Length: 119
Figure 1 (cartoon, rainbow, N blue to C red):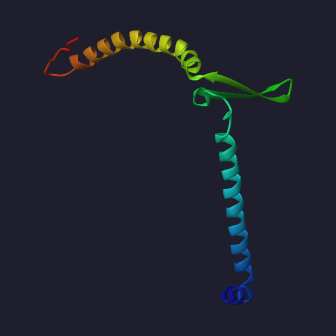
Figure 2 (figure 1 turned 30 degrees about the horizontal axis):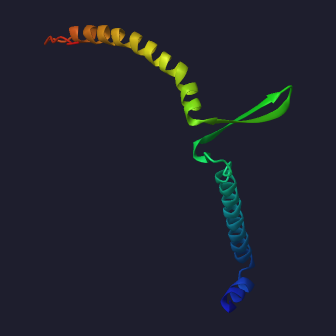
Figure 3 (figure 1 turned 30 degrees about the vertical axis):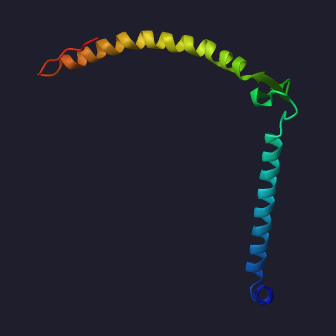
C-alpha cells in the first residue's frame, strides 16, 4: 500500500488512468454478470421451464418502438421454422440436381479423355 501511494505521488496521471480502467473493468464485469443472471433466471417458476423458449420481436408501430415477447415450446418452434424451409430445400434440390448433372456432363465433354457420370 505504501508503494502504491509513493508511485501515485510520482505519476498521478498513470495512477488515475489505472484506477479508472480498473473501476471501469469491474463495472463492466458486474453489468455483464447482472445481465447474465437476469437472462438465465427467466421463467424459472414454471414446471416445464426447460422446454420454454422466448421469442422477442422488436419493431416500430406508427413511429413508436414496440417490443413484444412471445413464448413457445420447442416442438412449436421447430415446426414453425421447418414448415416452409423444408419445402424450399426440396424444391431447390429438385432444380439443382438436373442442372448440376447436365452442367457437369457438358464440362466433362471438353476433356480429351472422356468419362461418363453415373447416376
